[in-house]
Length: 128
Image (cartoon, rainbow, N blue to C red; front, side):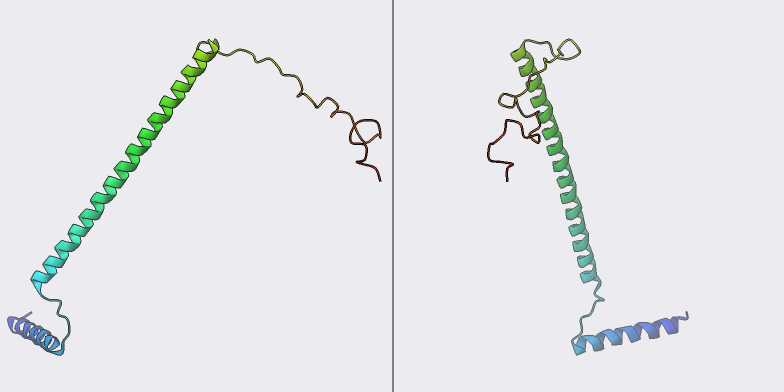
C-alpha cells in the first residue's frame, strides 16, 4: 500500500476509536491494558497447570503409599499365619491336604425325599 493510504486508514481508525469512546463504548485498543490482561491470563494458566501437577503427584504418592501398606499388611498376615500354625511359608512344603469335613450337624434327614409321604418333616405341612 502507498504511505498515503496507510495514513488515511490509521486516521480513520483513530477517529473511530475517539467517536466510540465519546459514545461510551469500551475501547479494546490500549496496548498496556491488553498486555496486562494477557499476562494475567498466562499467570492463571500457569497456576492451574501447577495445581494440576500437584494433584496428580498427590494421587500417585497416595496410591503408592496405599499399595505399600497393603503389601506390608499381607506380609504380616502371612507371617502371622505361619507362626500360628507352625508351618513354613511358601512353596508346596507349607501346603497340606485339608481333611474333608462331614455333613453339618442337624441335617441328617435332608437327603430323603419328603414327596413319598414317608416320615420326617413337619406333620401338618404338605397335607390338605
